[in-house]
Length: 196
Figure 1 (cartoon, rainbow, N blue to C red):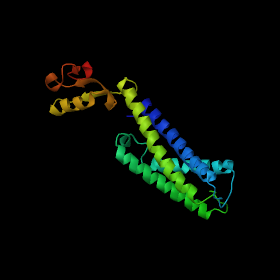
Figure 2: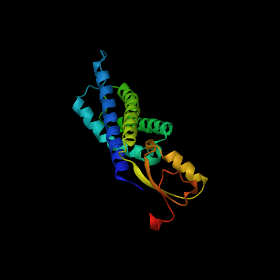
Figure 3: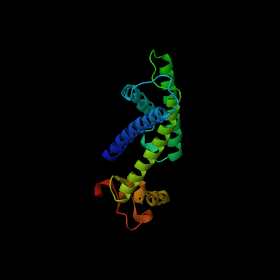
Figure 4: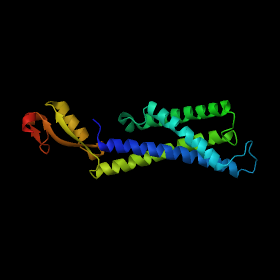
């Protein structure tokens, strides 16, 4: 079930991804512009930024199709980094293809998209790690936790309660519907839903 916290988290991920992509490609433009070697196609930074902003919706859609905004991927760090790499590289391929097919050049030099890809990927990983750290800190403070009622009466119930009892899991256990046999004393237990 979705709650407001997960929607805010996904919203901030989209904003962070947009920021990382723009910052990465602007940094690539600045690095190449600072080079003493002349560029093949001189262009204004405003033109470059307009082209970049036009490509961003495609990139975010691609990230969404790769599942980078699904809740199931948020806690699987290496899977997320792999998907970020695939999404960034696929976006780079799309940008290079668009540049090849376009009548006007999109980049001042051939190395700009490669620099942009590398810097943007690094920024995506760093910013997402920072957001994840902030989210974990808020969980430890009790902010943004999802409320949970566990239903069951078996040894697995005890294991579930043990694994979900820390605030860093993102859950707050309200109680257990079942007999007290497998439920720790500090967790409220109810015989049925009517008594909850």
